[in-house]
Length: 299
View 1 (tube, rainbow, N blue to C red):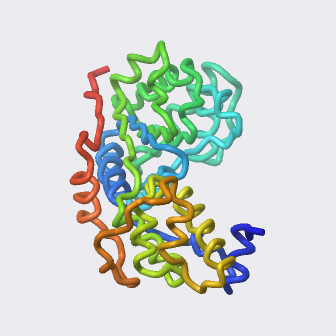
View 2 (view 1 turned 30 degrees about the vertical axis):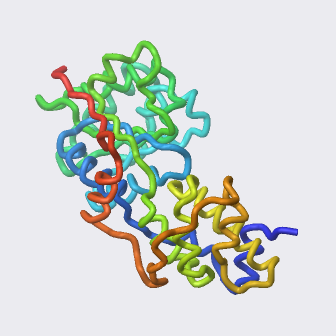
């Protein structure tokens, strides 16, 4: 009988899930950080797109932490029902001590000086998670909200949309799309996947097994890579081994005869490339352009 994730870590002597507090910069993370730095300076609207578990929220959180902006989030769980009124209320609650007033024109008039004065003191960023679920009417209203004017200035804040698919792909929001940069995250490279395993639970893997693991298609995604690690650890422990071997990797491979790594030289202390090296690694490994942007047009 296979052990669950937490049961596995308890039996291996951990007091906390080793994946939980891992801070790992990838080429994707570097790209997001650089793009958001410019977006915040430009008060732009940006969509960060990628499959579940690829590290979107973590990359955005890390990037905005370096910028030191005032962050606004909407806590409503049913994202498809988030309205522009919910966003206005969230901005008032997160940016000042006032209580949101009644709906419509009254709250809009209340919000304008709050955002205007806050933006003069620092950067304001509205972050909307699961943006693929937002209604088209909300996205169009968000464009209008960004155009609010205070003391002769407009576009007072930055909008960051985070989603598993492009929220601008639906019909009726083409004008919003023209004002939005869409950044598609590419996922982990093999070197990054190996470095992540090494930095978290690498002591339970033979170096050659880590190399073989990173060749599997699921290894481009943080969550799926974690699941792979748990699966092969179960195989190894069931077989009475203290470390995962190449045979354990072969056992879970879709092709049981898959070729094993040609190079078996990775050491257990090697880490994935960080900073600009990680960015270059991503760009080098992708034939298509890493960033798909739409040119913004004047309001």
